[in-house]
Amino acid sequence: MIDFEHLVKDFDKKAQSMGVGELARQARVDRSAVWRLRNGDVKLLSSGVRRLCKAAGLNADHYTRSNPPVQNRKLMKALADTWDGTTAQANAICSVLRALQRVPRVIISPADNGLPRNSSVHKMKA
Image (cartoon, rainbow, N blue to C red):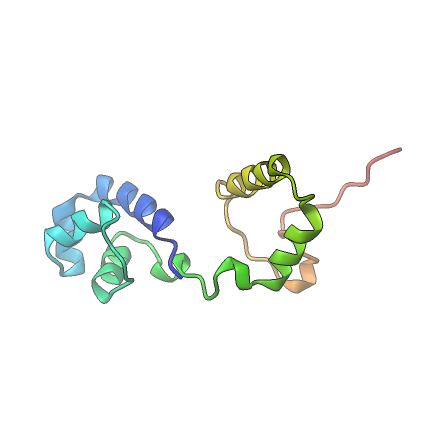
């Protein structure tokens, strides 16, 4: 599964600064391929799209997902444990998850107990 929404958004930012012609030249593709990617008119992470990503300084693998979210047991359990079944809370959970898209992605190891390396746990005083 490929996160084309973020790929297109990030690529478009890079394309604005580099220029269509320069990206096409570096990636050895036609200028129309640059425009198709900028406009989100892509369905596959083809070799041409990968070359365009590389030319723009993007890692194409960053936008791939090995499994759809519904196949992630841990994620689905957390959702089931959190959601009370109401539309209002579903909307609230969706808002929180979408807000996380704006948070920089960090690498979390199991030894970190699920916390990013720069996070710390603070105990609240009662």
